[in-house]
Amino acid sequence: MENGRIPWKGWGYRHDAPNTALCFCKNPRSLLHDASTWTRDDGEKIEKILLNGKGNIDFSREIHTLGAYFRNYCISVRIIYFTDTFYPTTNGIVTSIISFSRELADRGHEVCIIVPDNPGVGDFEYHGIEILPMKGFPAFFYPDFKITFIFTPSLIQKIRKFKPDIIHYHTQFILGWQAIVLGKILKIPRIGTFHTYIADEGYLKVIGLENFHIFGELGWKYNNFFYEHCEHVISPSVNAREELIDHGIPAEKISLLPNPLPIEKKTALIHMDIATNTPNIIFSIGRLSKEKSFDVCIETIYLVSKKIPDVCFVIVGDGPERENLEELSRKLGIENNVRFLGKIPHEELMNSDIFARSKCFLTASTTETQGITIIEAMSFGLPIVGVDEKGVGEMIEDNGYKAKAGSAEELAGYCITLLEDAELWKKFSEKSFQIVKKYDVRKLTDNLEAIYVTTMKHGPRRK
Image (tube, rainbow, N blue to C red; front, top):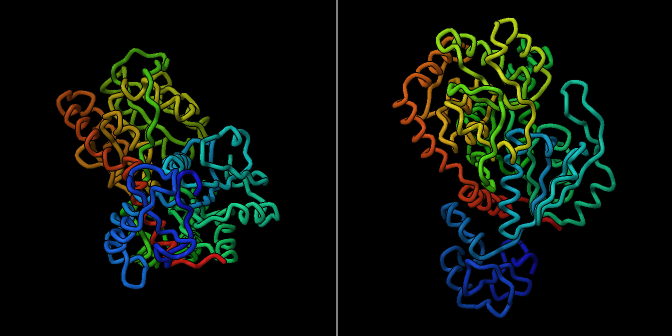
């Protein structure tokens, strides 16, 4: 037994067979610390519910039933993540990985995360989570991105030592390639999460190829390599799932699993000095790069300021476009209406009072599979003003407004309405509080565990 859980040994074992994984306890909600609590009766009961006559899981059952089996009977699984972006970088992918990893570790699973060896990565510590940094060199095409060395003997040795039950990759780049190949060689089932529309015009704009449509087509072929060569695909939004299906990934291979709202240790909110006393604060978070369309947000604030002169746009985040955005603010004469706060550690941001002081959350990004920053804003009851594109469009229900992509005029009109109509603001705020409940990391981890169960059942068997 490890971490108070029964180590995973694969399906196909009877509860009374040697080395069985099907051991059960009298109190299934508690972690197993004493083998004497296991009973044959418990095993026979759950077997009747979940197992067919051959002693294998019946996967015609609902995924939630499998998740309940997985968590209630305390089976421990070793999960290895591959990601090309990680702490201390702050973005949606990192937040999602950390949130799920912590919850899995809290449940007794073992998690190993393979990441680029960026400065500060060693500062991340959490019980049950091991970090394996990989050496590499900076990429010329995207700041803060590191190209890691491939298939180093030390990596293979460490993976063999960890003995993962499943590989889960969150990248379509170097470490994603390694995850696919190593999974095949070592016969470990693989899951890929589709986080990024790398073939989208917004991302092609970053490297100056947005006018060459052939690169969009090639981008999807490249993208599909990562999701054709894994046993299962996770999509964080309905739109992203439909895009994958439209580009040839089988629908039955894709599960919908939104990015989660992390559980933060809430303390008394810390006052954040943004050098303004205005009540009309519009807030946004994100990497300041071309694909995030912050230039449209700046133009939106310019239009809002004509009607509401004391409006203040607060931006948390940094990136290669910061200087250009600051220059755009000066050019439009609204440099006093915009605050660039730069990078702020995630926990510090979530414990600050900036959300509570803001009237709405603004995003003009058209490249989101699903915006975690929107989820975080909704958790503080903020109405959302965004664009009707991809993941953002489906996240805004009756808690805000959706504008046409690139339309600063529409976005500005919606912002003005929210700043001027207190009753409408209250209605949207209450709706945000309701909507955000479906992104609870605990509920979503139940589903993630169930996805792991099905993938391990049907994937290759490690020798």
